[in-house]
Image (cartoon, rainbow, N blue to C red; front, side, top):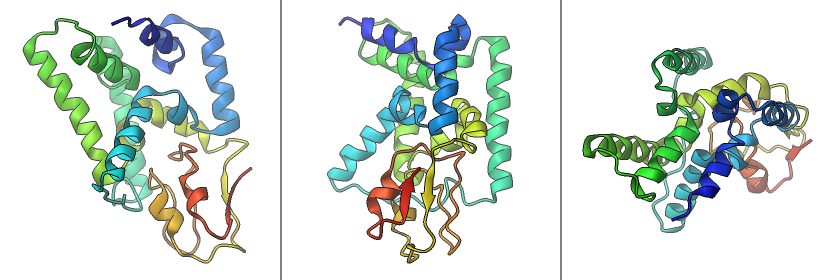
Length: 222
């Protein structure tokens, strides 16, 4: 199998771009986050796309379990502590050459090569790779994109800035009837279920699931 496409895809990923000093790619990612928030996580990150496809396929087969309102049933402060803790661990892992074990493209690329690329990984290492990707995918049934919004250091890093994006999903309180359809439709558990209906834009990946679910047109992207 020709893996040239995998190499090309790696050029537009955040972590490989940082390692390669690809200024043009980094600027493009920065501009996209400033304008559109974490759209990168939905249309560029292969691990994010894989989780969406996995859930989409198995939802269609009847194995659906709706996500809870939050990735973890803890306060926002505790959630941020966990997320920043993984981000710090990711930064520290650079000193030991372990960045790829938490970087989304590293996880995806290593899995693709180990199971579909014919690369002879040791049996134990291959088993560890399999357990990691299985855990990430199976978590989509419990808390949807739990990995993206609680563990992934790239997601957390981008989330620090996506809160201030120019274009974001917004809720028209005058049209909202508090039916919570958007809460149930959100892949990331970033819409509060109370009457205030606040959106945590640090976790929103601009998938538009909430807007599609709203029958009153209360959610728009502007």
